[in-house]
Length: 550
Image (cartoon, rainbow, N blue to C red):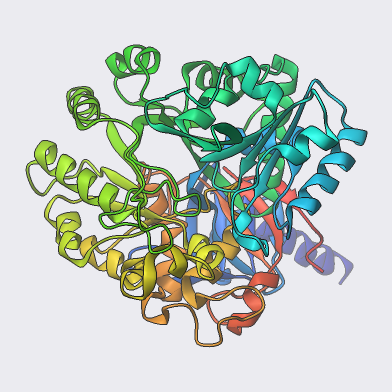
């Protein structure tokens, strides 16, 4: 009897070992989840297996657990899994520097509050330059641009530079004007210097703002690495596994590449190069660069400024500035030359265009180079105000709108002042833009907006702020469906940089980038979406951020 019992136990052990040996080895198995694959049919699954940084199988718990074995398993306890989020338009490098070096002026309700935040920052982080970012005069009772007289009172003889929320305007102290050699008679092509009573106010727009920024001391290599790692950490914490850095120079690009090659920076970065001669001459002859962690195959053009600072180029004058239509930043010949070089080098062209005048100009410029339907995926970044007569050009020339759904929420309370009741209907028309080609790219434009892609998703479907206003949504007919919104921050964002074969959905052979959320954003009450928390973020099967699931 004893021998029979021992024999039976031994047989069971042999069977168990045999079953294990018959299973394929996986580096990670996740099960007991609701998985949104975001594949072509938007199917769901319960479990997935990962090997060598890629998904190898997705299916039911029974299918995965019966075919795969791993020493690393995760019981998701019924939580919700999505592809790793992709920010289709951001300023990753600038964000890292902002959170590490600049006073945060976002959300300030008066210029006095700006001054108080600067004092606090200066006491904690004293430096030669007092820098700040994020102010928006549209949130103040007095919505006119400030001048630098208060800076002279509070920070006499200091170098102070404060960037507006959109990055297209700065307020600088008299000391910075002196260093830059800017006075009431200075002229900068593509820029505006605000003058009152024949005196510079300290407000500089577009190219003039860029010129002033060029005098800020360059941080050390150690500081720059820290900025990027801080940005990466915050990205992983909100479920971002890939970002697009919309406009960098050679020096920054090579630095990012070196950190990635050394294994210090893991996040995937899609980079658009700025259109200066050094960048064009260095990168375009190489053709598109597609590495495991870095994609570089596009050039960023800048057609106009921002609506909030009245730098966006409109066809008709601003509703609240009847003598002003904004301005194009460069002449048409320059844009055309860059487009021609891009065609020859296999580069994608991505152009910042916000006003309907700028959008029209770029649509017609693109049409001259693209000739018709194509798969070059040239993009118009923001596509914020578009005349109905121009919409068809997106479809005719396969031009892809790259939108930021949170912009319409940030702008909705004052955009009507800039555009008026008739023209506002043509602004932030994201559903209408989606219909042109059947897909679009979504992003945050961080640090101009919050880095969290879940806020992008919420803004896209609700068209409301986090307090639920307006009750019916801002131009609700332009809201995206939940499936469209999710695709816009996953597979369509990947497609926007030619990476859809490697990421953007949970499918076999793709990078194992995925995120676990504590709520089902596809079905939970709309008002609960902004409170959704990331529990885990995985990059190529590696856990890069986690909170306890329970």
